[in-house]
Image (cartoon, rainbow over all chains, first blue to last red; front, side, top):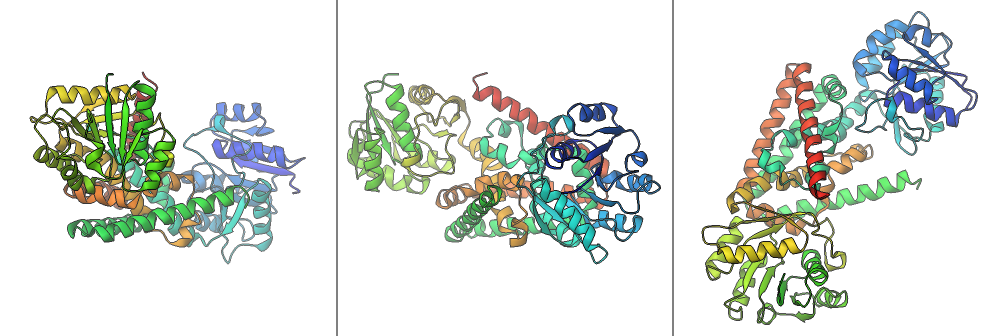
Length: 288
Length: 288
C-alpha cells in the first residue's frame, strides 16, 4: 500500500498498535501521533510506533493522507473541531470506535462528504495503554467498515486497503446494523458479566471456578470506555437486555413445568451452536 | 492414606480420573468400577483407572471400604437401591454430584446413619467420558463436603482425607447453602451462557469475538448433565435468574437516566471485584 503520511490521534493500545503495524507493513510511511498524556507520547516514540509527537491534534494532521481517531469516543466531537482548520482537503479520516451510528452522523456533519469512513477494527484486550501495543494486534481479526450513501467509494477503498494491509479481514455493515448486532454480541455480554459479578455474595465467590472466571472475563475491561459505549448505544443495549430477559423467562417456564426434555433440547442446541461458532472462528483466524 | 478397596460407580470423566488419581496416590488400593457402557469399562481397564469391571453395581461394592457415586445425579436413586443388598455395613459412601440437598436427603434415607457423606469435587471440563480422564484433574481444585447433623465425624474425616490425598483443597457447607451459592456462581452462569448464544441472530454471531466465546464457554457442556442440575436445583436457579434480572434492571435504570457517573462506578467496582477474585484464585491454585 502506498501511504506517505498517517496521523494517529490518541496513542493508547489501539493507536500504538496501529503505529507499530504500519511501521512493519508499509515502508516509507511517516507516522505522527497526538496524545494528551506526554508519557504515552514519549513511550510511543521510544517503541517506534510514531515518528513525531504532538500535544495538540491540529498540528498533527497538517500533512496527513490518512487520519485515524483513536481516542475514547466521547472525545471525538472536540477532536474533529480541533483538526478541521488544519486537515488537508484530500485527507481521509477514519476511526476505531466501538459504536458507529453517532460517530458517523457526527463526522459526516463535521467533515467534507468524501472524507469520512467509519471503521471498527475488532481487536484489543482488557489491557489499556500504549505499553501493551503490539504490531500483530490486528492480524486475522475482523474489521467492520460502515459506509453510508454519503461515503465516497474511493475513500472507502483506501480505508479498507489500509486495514487489509495490517492483516485484517473485512466486512461492511450500515452504522445502524453495526450498533444493533454489536449490542447483542458484545455490549450485552459485557453488561451481563459485570452483573454476574455484582450479584454474588462473598461466600459464592470463594466457590467460583474456572467457568465463572471465563464467563465474567470481559467485565475486567476499562470502565470509562464501556460507560461511553453503553451511553452511546443505549437504545440498542436496552433492547438487548430485554431480549436476554425474555430468554431467561423461557428458562423459568421450562423449570416451572419441570420440562426436562425441553431443557435438554435447549441446552444441546445452544451447546452445538456455540461449537459450530468456535470451529468457524478457528477457520477464520487461521486463514481458512 | 490407608484404603484397600475403592468402588467407583460410573466410569466417565470424573470416575475415570478418580481411578487414575488413586492409582498414583494410594498404593495397594484395589479399584472396582461399575458402568453401563462396556466400551467405557474396557477403556477404564486399559488405562489402569480400575482393576475390575462390573456391568452391575451390586457386585462392584461387595468388598468396598469407600464407594463413590459418579453417575449422573438422576440415576442415584436406583443406584442406591441396587447396592443396598451387597454394601458392607462398614463401607462409607460419597458422591461427586453438582447438587447436594436432594442427594443428601435421598442417601440419608437409604443408607445407614454413618455411611453417607456428600461431596462436590469442583473439577471437570466441558469434555465428557473416560477417554478424557486425567490423574491430575483434582490437583489444587476445591472439594466441598456437605455434612449434616446425621453425618458421622469418622466417615466425614475419611472422605475428606480421601479428597485431600487426591490433591484437593477442602471446604464444608450445609447442603442448603451449597445449592444456593452454587446456583448463583455456577448454575446461573451456565443458563446465561446458553441464553446469550440462543438470542443471537446469525449475523451477530459472525461478528462474535474472543469475548463472546469466553463468556459463553460453559454453554458447551453436556446437556443431559445440566438438565439434571437445573431440574434438581430449580428453586435456587429460579431465585438466581430473578436476582440477575434485578441487576440488569439496575443497568436499564442507569441507561434511562443517562447516568454515566453511576455506570462507570458500577463497571469499575465489578472489574475490580473480579480482578481481586482472579488474584485470590491464582494464590489458591498455586498453593499460596
